[in-house]
Image 1 (cartoon, rainbow, N blue to C red):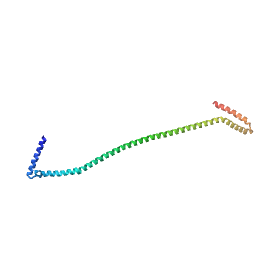
Image 2 (image 1 turned 90 degrees about the horizontal axis):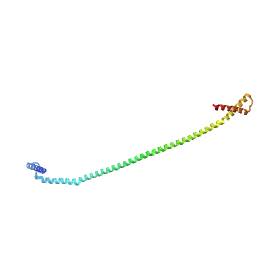
Image 3 (image 1 turned 120 degrees about the vertical axis):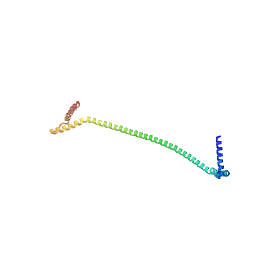
Image 4 (image 1 turned 180 degrees about the horizontal axis):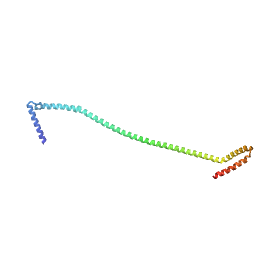
Length: 195
């Protein structure tokens, strides 16, 4: 109710000011005589402006806004697809890296096992060769031990025979010399074995 009273008061004051100024030759816009023509041209002007805006300008603006909205939606969709593709690629790269690491570990283990196997085989072969050589050397030592007294006796007999022959000037019976050398050798070997 207060609003209505306030509006009536405002209208009355405006009307009073307009009539008083029109009578004094003031502004023609405020003269009630010209109000009808002013309202007519106001309707024509704003009607034309409304028609131009509603038929030409606003549809273009709406069309541009819609195109921008569609472009933004398309860009968002493209960005989402690229993000998904990037995540997929990242997962694939992670899988490839993991597979590569596992493959490298397998290759390293296989190479290590192969090297260890080869080293073990070579060690076994070397041990076999060393054992074979040791057996051969032991055999030769045993044979040398067994054959050395005879050879030593034979050499000693020959040397003794030669020495006696040069000292005396005549040949000595070889069998008696070798018997003497053998007897001395037995005495010597008993004394060394006893030590």
